[in-house]
Amino acid sequence: AVAKSDVNSGTGRTVKQEKKKNEAEEMIKNKRTVFVGNLPVNYTMLKSLFKEYGQIESIRFRSVVPAEVALSRKLATIKRKIHPNVKYINAYVVFKEEHAAVKALKKNGTEVASGFHIRVDSASKNTVSLNRRVLLCLPADISDSAVREHFADCGDVVAVRIVRDRQSGMGKGFGYVLFENTDAVHLALKLNNSDLMGRKLRVKRCSEKGKAPQKSTTSRSHGPKARAQTTLKNKSGSHDSFVGEKANPAKKSTKPKRLKSITKKKGGKNK
Image (cartoon, rainbow, N blue to C red):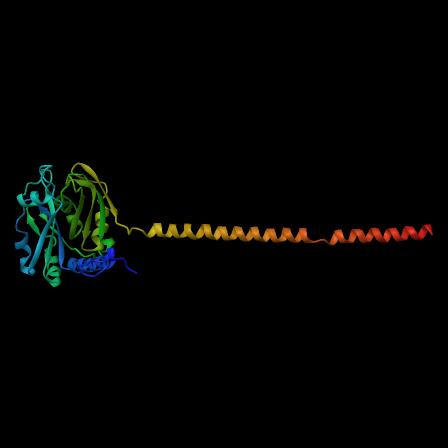
Protein backbone atom coordinates (compact mmCIF):
# COMPACT_ATOMS: atom_id res chain seq x y z
CA ALA A 1 0.00 0.00 0.00
CA VAL A 2 1.17 3.53 -0.80
CA ALA A 3 1.34 5.91 2.17
CA LYS A 4 -0.77 9.05 1.93
CA SER A 5 2.34 11.18 2.57
CA ASP A 6 3.91 9.77 -0.66
CA VAL A 7 0.98 10.93 -2.82
CA ASN A 8 0.74 14.44 -4.24
CA SER A 9 -2.70 15.74 -3.25
CA GLY A 10 -2.88 18.00 -6.29
CA THR A 11 -2.06 15.40 -8.97
CA GLY A 12 -2.86 12.13 -7.20
CA ARG A 13 0.53 10.71 -8.27
CA THR A 14 3.24 9.25 -6.06
CA VAL A 15 6.68 10.85 -5.68
CA LYS A 16 8.16 8.18 -7.96
CA GLN A 17 5.50 8.78 -10.60
CA GLU A 18 6.07 12.54 -10.41
CA LYS A 19 9.81 12.02 -10.87
CA LYS A 20 9.30 9.84 -13.94
CA LYS A 21 6.86 12.36 -15.40
CA ASN A 22 9.30 15.25 -14.85
CA GLU A 23 12.16 13.27 -16.42
CA ALA A 24 10.02 12.47 -19.46
CA GLU A 25 9.04 16.13 -19.84
CA GLU A 26 12.68 17.20 -19.48
CA MET A 27 13.75 14.79 -22.22
CA ILE A 28 11.11 16.20 -24.57
CA LYS A 29 12.14 19.76 -23.70
CA ASN A 30 15.83 19.00 -24.32
CA LYS A 31 14.98 17.97 -27.87
CA ARG A 32 13.66 21.51 -28.38
CA THR A 33 16.73 23.09 -26.77
CA VAL A 34 20.17 24.00 -28.11
CA PHE A 35 23.29 24.78 -26.10
CA VAL A 36 25.23 27.82 -27.29
CA GLY A 37 28.81 28.10 -26.04
CA ASN A 38 31.62 30.64 -26.35
CA LEU A 39 29.42 33.73 -26.40
CA PRO A 40 30.94 37.15 -25.63
CA VAL A 41 29.80 38.38 -22.21
CA ASN A 42 28.26 41.49 -23.73
CA TYR A 43 26.43 39.71 -26.55
CA THR A 44 22.75 40.73 -26.74
CA MET A 45 21.71 39.51 -30.20
CA LEU A 46 21.13 35.85 -29.34
CA LYS A 47 17.38 35.89 -29.98
CA SER A 48 17.87 37.66 -33.31
CA LEU A 49 20.49 35.11 -34.27
CA PHE A 50 18.14 32.13 -33.94
CA LYS A 51 14.65 33.54 -34.60
CA GLU A 52 14.85 32.63 -38.30
CA TYR A 53 14.53 28.92 -37.39
CA GLY A 54 11.33 29.17 -35.37
CA GLN A 55 9.57 30.65 -32.38
CA ILE A 56 11.76 30.87 -29.27
CA GLU A 57 10.20 29.92 -25.93
CA SER A 58 13.00 31.06 -23.60
CA ILE A 59 16.72 31.86 -23.32
CA ARG A 60 18.77 31.01 -20.24
CA PHE A 61 22.35 32.24 -19.75
CA ARG A 62 24.89 30.14 -17.88
CA SER A 63 28.55 30.30 -16.71
CA VAL A 64 28.02 33.84 -15.45
CA VAL A 65 30.40 34.99 -12.69
CA PRO A 66 29.10 38.14 -10.95
CA ALA A 67 31.43 41.13 -10.67
CA GLU A 68 30.51 41.45 -6.99
CA VAL A 69 30.12 38.72 -4.40
CA ALA A 70 26.81 40.13 -3.14
CA LEU A 71 25.34 40.14 -6.65
CA SER A 72 23.25 37.13 -7.72
CA ARG A 73 23.96 35.37 -11.02
CA LYS A 74 20.53 36.30 -12.34
CA LEU A 75 20.97 39.99 -11.59
CA ALA A 76 24.52 39.95 -12.91
CA THR A 77 23.21 38.47 -16.18
CA ILE A 78 20.45 41.07 -16.52
CA LYS A 79 22.71 44.03 -15.73
CA ARG A 80 25.71 42.42 -17.45
CA LYS A 81 27.82 43.02 -14.37
CA ILE A 82 30.20 40.13 -14.97
CA HIS A 83 33.65 39.54 -13.50
CA PRO A 84 36.34 41.16 -15.70
CA ASN A 85 38.30 37.89 -15.95
CA VAL A 86 35.34 36.17 -17.62
CA LYS A 87 35.38 36.57 -21.39
CA TYR A 88 32.87 33.90 -22.37
CA ILE A 89 29.39 32.81 -21.30
CA ASN A 90 27.05 30.02 -22.40
CA ALA A 91 23.32 29.91 -23.02
CA TYR A 92 20.40 27.57 -23.64
CA VAL A 93 17.86 28.49 -26.31
CA VAL A 94 14.50 26.70 -26.01
CA PHE A 95 12.33 26.58 -29.15
CA LYS A 96 8.61 25.92 -29.38
CA GLU A 97 9.14 23.13 -31.91
CA GLU A 98 11.74 20.37 -32.10
CA HIS A 99 12.42 20.84 -35.82
CA ALA A 100 13.46 24.46 -35.12
CA ALA A 101 16.15 23.26 -32.70
CA VAL A 102 17.46 20.83 -35.31
CA LYS A 103 17.73 23.60 -37.89
CA ALA A 104 19.44 25.90 -35.37
CA LEU A 105 22.43 23.53 -35.26
CA LYS A 106 23.48 25.08 -38.58
CA LYS A 107 24.77 28.05 -36.60
CA ASN A 108 27.55 25.96 -35.09
CA GLY A 109 30.91 27.61 -35.75
CA THR A 110 29.40 30.99 -36.63
CA GLU A 111 31.63 33.94 -35.73
CA VAL A 112 29.32 36.28 -33.79
CA ALA A 113 32.11 38.70 -32.84
CA SER A 114 35.81 39.08 -33.56
CA GLY A 115 37.47 35.83 -32.39
CA PHE A 116 34.22 34.34 -31.03
CA HIS A 117 33.04 31.25 -32.92
CA ILE A 118 30.00 29.88 -31.11
CA ARG A 119 29.48 26.19 -30.39
CA VAL A 120 25.89 25.04 -30.97
CA ASP A 121 24.88 21.57 -29.76
CA SER A 122 21.63 19.81 -29.06
CA ALA A 123 20.81 19.81 -25.33
CA SER A 124 19.66 16.20 -25.60
CA LYS A 125 22.44 13.66 -25.32
CA ASN A 126 23.94 13.16 -28.73
CA THR A 127 26.50 10.56 -29.76
CA VAL A 128 29.52 12.38 -31.12
CA SER A 129 32.08 10.01 -32.60
CA LEU A 130 35.11 9.97 -30.31
CA ASN A 131 37.47 9.24 -33.21
CA ARG A 132 36.85 12.79 -34.47
CA ARG A 133 37.94 14.46 -31.22
CA VAL A 134 41.29 15.20 -29.59
CA LEU A 135 42.00 15.97 -25.94
CA LEU A 136 44.22 18.95 -25.18
CA CYS A 137 46.21 20.11 -22.15
CA LEU A 138 45.96 23.90 -22.35
CA PRO A 139 47.01 27.11 -20.59
CA ALA A 140 44.32 28.35 -18.18
CA ASP A 141 43.86 31.67 -19.97
CA ILE A 142 43.58 30.22 -23.50
CA SER A 143 40.75 31.33 -25.80
CA ASP A 144 38.63 29.18 -28.10
CA SER A 145 39.68 31.23 -31.11
CA ALA A 146 43.39 30.65 -30.38
CA VAL A 147 42.83 26.88 -30.27
CA ARG A 148 40.72 26.97 -33.43
CA GLU A 149 43.39 28.93 -35.28
CA HIS A 150 46.15 26.61 -34.09
CA PHE A 151 44.41 23.56 -35.60
CA ALA A 152 42.94 25.26 -38.67
CA ASP A 153 45.50 23.71 -41.06
CA CYS A 154 44.60 20.18 -39.88
CA GLY A 155 41.08 20.30 -41.31
CA ASP A 156 37.61 21.68 -40.70
CA VAL A 157 37.07 22.35 -36.99
CA VAL A 158 33.47 21.66 -36.00
CA ALA A 159 33.76 22.87 -32.42
CA VAL A 160 36.22 23.82 -29.69
CA ARG A 161 35.37 23.24 -26.05
CA ILE A 162 37.54 24.54 -23.24
CA VAL A 163 36.47 23.25 -19.84
CA ARG A 164 36.19 26.21 -17.49
CA ASP A 165 35.73 26.71 -13.77
CA ARG A 166 32.16 27.75 -12.93
CA GLN A 167 33.24 30.17 -10.21
CA SER A 168 36.11 32.01 -11.91
CA GLY A 169 35.42 31.35 -15.60
CA MET A 170 39.08 30.43 -16.11
CA GLY A 171 40.10 27.34 -18.01
CA LYS A 172 40.81 24.19 -16.03
CA GLY A 173 43.78 23.32 -18.20
CA PHE A 174 42.17 20.97 -20.72
CA GLY A 175 39.67 20.96 -23.54
CA TYR A 176 38.55 19.26 -26.76
CA VAL A 177 38.58 19.90 -30.48
CA LEU A 178 35.98 18.22 -32.68
CA PHE A 179 36.89 17.82 -36.35
CA GLU A 180 34.77 17.16 -39.40
CA ASN A 181 36.60 13.90 -40.19
CA THR A 182 39.18 11.50 -38.80
CA ASP A 183 41.88 12.56 -41.25
CA ALA A 184 42.09 15.89 -39.46
CA VAL A 185 42.63 14.06 -36.15
CA HIS A 186 45.74 12.31 -37.52
CA LEU A 187 47.18 15.68 -38.51
CA ALA A 188 46.22 17.23 -35.17
CA LEU A 189 48.11 14.52 -33.27
CA LYS A 190 51.28 15.64 -35.05
CA LEU A 191 50.93 19.00 -33.26
CA ASN A 192 51.66 17.34 -29.93
CA ASN A 193 54.40 19.33 -28.11
CA SER A 194 53.91 22.27 -30.47
CA ASP A 195 54.12 25.80 -29.03
CA LEU A 196 50.91 27.66 -28.14
CA MET A 197 51.04 30.90 -26.17
CA GLY A 198 54.60 30.16 -25.11
CA ARG A 199 53.79 26.69 -23.77
CA LYS A 200 54.09 23.15 -25.03
CA LEU A 201 50.71 21.87 -26.17
CA ARG A 202 49.81 18.26 -25.37
CA VAL A 203 47.50 16.58 -27.87
CA LYS A 204 46.00 13.13 -27.26
CA ARG A 205 43.38 11.04 -28.98
CA CYS A 206 40.09 10.77 -27.11
CA SER A 207 39.28 7.26 -25.93
CA GLU A 208 35.94 5.89 -24.76
CA LYS A 209 35.66 5.80 -20.99
CA GLY A 210 34.73 2.73 -19.05
CA LYS A 211 35.76 -0.09 -21.42
CA ALA A 212 39.07 -0.97 -19.82
CA PRO A 213 37.76 -0.81 -16.23
CA GLN A 214 34.83 -3.02 -17.18
CA LYS A 215 37.14 -5.67 -18.55
CA SER A 216 39.41 -5.55 -15.53
CA THR A 217 36.43 -5.56 -13.17
CA THR A 218 35.00 -8.60 -14.91
CA SER A 219 38.25 -10.50 -14.64
CA ARG A 220 38.52 -9.57 -10.97
CA SER A 221 34.96 -10.55 -10.17
CA HIS A 222 35.09 -13.94 -11.89
CA GLY A 223 38.76 -14.71 -11.20
CA PRO A 224 38.61 -14.97 -7.40
CA LYS A 225 35.33 -16.89 -7.57
CA ALA A 226 36.82 -19.40 -9.94
CA ARG A 227 39.93 -19.71 -7.76
CA ALA A 228 37.80 -20.04 -4.64
CA GLN A 229 35.70 -22.77 -6.24
CA THR A 230 38.84 -24.61 -7.37
CA THR A 231 40.31 -24.33 -3.86
CA LEU A 232 37.13 -25.66 -2.31
CA LYS A 233 37.08 -28.55 -4.74
CA ASN A 234 40.70 -29.40 -3.96
CA LYS A 235 40.04 -29.17 -0.26
CA SER A 236 36.95 -31.34 -0.49
CA GLY A 237 38.80 -33.89 -2.63
CA SER A 238 41.71 -34.20 -0.23
CA HIS A 239 39.30 -34.42 2.68
CA ASP A 240 37.45 -37.33 1.06
CA SER A 241 40.66 -39.25 0.40
CA PHE A 242 41.82 -38.59 3.94
CA VAL A 243 38.56 -39.93 5.34
CA GLY A 244 38.80 -42.97 3.09
CA GLU A 245 42.23 -43.85 4.43
CA LYS A 246 41.13 -43.32 7.99
CA ALA A 247 37.96 -45.33 7.59
CA ASN A 248 39.70 -48.40 6.10
CA PRO A 249 39.82 -50.96 9.02
CA ALA A 250 41.16 -53.91 6.99
CA LYS A 251 44.56 -54.19 8.67
CA LYS A 252 43.17 -53.80 12.19
CA SER A 253 40.54 -56.51 11.68
CA THR A 254 43.08 -59.10 10.47
CA LYS A 255 45.41 -58.80 13.45
CA PRO A 256 43.07 -60.33 16.03
CA LYS A 257 42.28 -63.23 13.69
CA ARG A 258 45.97 -64.06 13.30
CA LEU A 259 46.43 -64.04 17.06
CA LYS A 260 43.56 -66.48 17.55
CA SER A 261 44.93 -68.95 15.01
CA ILE A 262 48.38 -68.90 16.63
CA THR A 263 46.88 -69.63 20.05
CA LYS A 264 45.06 -72.69 18.76
CA LYS A 265 48.26 -74.15 17.27
CA LYS A 266 50.19 -73.71 20.55
CA GLY A 267 47.43 -75.47 22.40
CA GLY A 268 47.60 -78.46 20.08
CA LYS A 269 51.33 -78.95 20.65
CA ASN A 270 50.94 -79.05 24.43
CA LYS A 271 48.41 -81.80 24.17
